[in-house]
Amino acid sequence: MKNIFVTGTDTGVGKTIVSACLLWKLREKGIKAGYFKPVQTGAENGIPSDAEFCKKILGLEEPYEALCGYILKLPASPHLAGSVEGIEIKPKVILEKFNQLLQKYEFLVVEGAGGLLVPINLKRYYIRELAKDLGLPLIITARAKLGTINHTLLTIESAKRAGLKILGVVLTPFPEKASII
Image 1 (cartoon, one colour):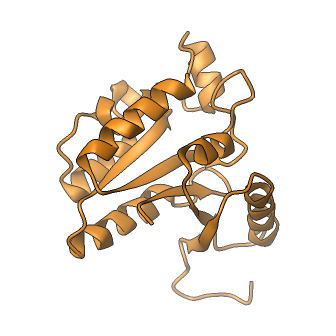
Image 2: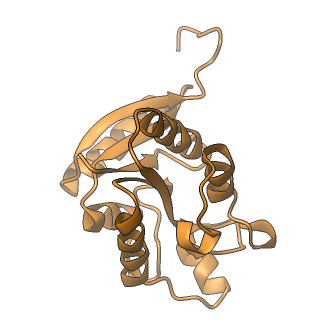
Image 3: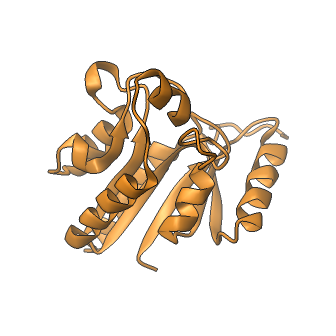
């Protein structure tokens, strides 16, 4: 395996933390690993928070524009943020930036936005299609709380329907004192 796609059952379920942890472990093992965020929304002052976190934690040298396919200000789904900001999100541009990073790194961790069925653009192109076009297996992040079984199984079903390989599910954040749920 050369690269991996980190997706989630929702937004705010720990994709960035899981991505950074994977990168940390890969780098600890001497693997030249890099980070890519195809579409970052909610970039206050033009700073993509997910890429910024990984850049600081891992000491990545690339500018944000190289780590992200698109950087959008509105904290919304990519298709809505792009539409409001007058930017057409093109899968071709994302794939080109991904391939540019592949020239530098032997392993890339790609972090999705939201879940698999989040629309990237107005042409019914979803995060799921992007993961498939990149040909990457998935790590799914999910909340460790009530409702997770349904959200996780729906995400797994969607991934399988698209022919995506699932490597595992990570529950985040796992509580210090777990309840029966």
